[in-house]
Figure 1 (cartoon, rainbow, N blue to C red):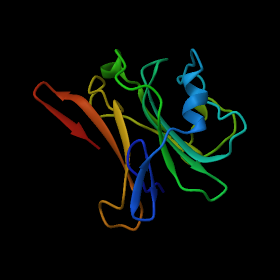
Figure 2: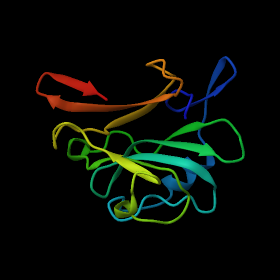
Figure 3: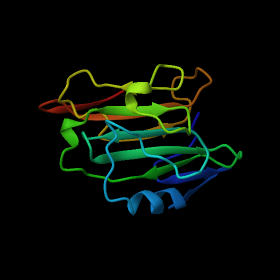
Figure 4: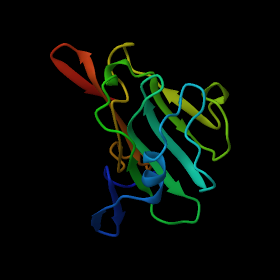
Length: 154
């Protein structure tokens, strides 16, 4: 899985801030609807792509891994969406083919939902190193609206 920090690429023991071609490409798109179609990578090959959505407005962080064996990267899409607490979920897909969210079946990707419908799950998304020691790198999903005086992460 992924081994980096938000908005950064891990190169050996150094962490370097990056802004990639994918971010430039997505920033130029005026609108997409992740409830119908996840963002297409315009010919760029990827192993997986993670994004949070607010029912049509992208938010949070995307995770991109190049099939060419280059270092993994996290790429910001849009931070601080005004509809962040009404997020519809965090989508993780394992394909670079065009498909709709309804095609997610567990083998090509899945949707992460929060505990409550209004907990804002997916407001922030980040990769983590092997936090729990199981040999796989982890993903952290924030939920700032979990409770009136506290937030949560999954």
